[in-house]
Image 1 (cartoon, one colour):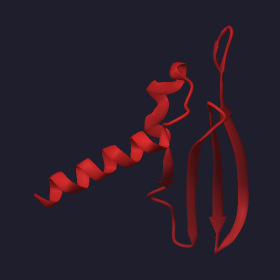
Image 2: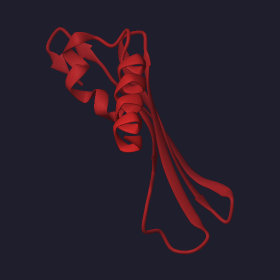
Image 3: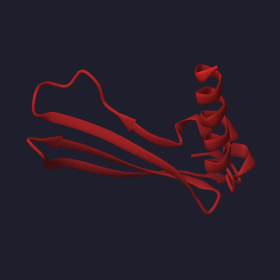
Image 4: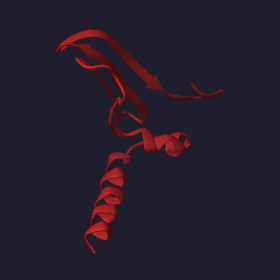
Length: 85
């Protein structure tokens, strides 16, 4: 029963995150939320965070070493007249 409730909560929360997303980007809604990078050496960490922004998807990726940011990128996926970019 707990597993069912957890899965139901995840489905509801991911659906709420996708509100306002351009319909042409709906197949990418699995990106929404925070992703932690696994398998890094000790003292290193990384994550990405994706959200809906005005119908587009925007993301920020961060790599850290010993608690200090060593790399950051800002990402955007948009649906334009000629396709998804």
